[in-house]
Length: 191
Image 1 (tube, rainbow, N blue to C red):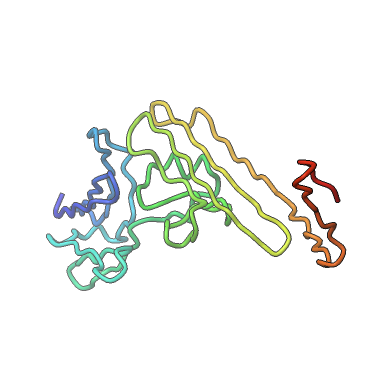
Image 2 (image 1 turned 120 degrees about the vertical axis):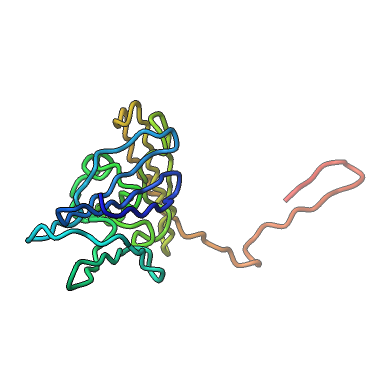
């Protein structure tokens, strides 16, 4: 190990570790200090060591800069798009990634837009519910996503969409509306 950068991402600590043989390894640790599987983000072709400093891009927080002997390499902090299914996205235990139901893909949270996304759990038992309401001229769609995990594995996944067609309201001409008259002496109403 030649360098380490620690970054807080939601409830996780993410360690980016540079090695003597030119690798950049990512290790995510949850709030209960359980580590996810390490992932190699970059591997140099010629086994040259990573210099002692790794820097996080202060503009987008999605890239790292690591120095080698003759170059500086820009490496993404995550490869969310490489996970093609919901199960792969969650199994990766990558705190930078969420499952975006509207795009049916694993991506960064801000790339999803709206609230129809599910992130990985913060700990080994976690319940996550997310919803999105979309209203158009003639319908409302409510999408609810729920996840229950036990020991870092999805135990139940629910994806429910409800579509409600809006019916036009027919307004009556005021002259066509019956008028109600109250007869005080009789105590009853008539039309």
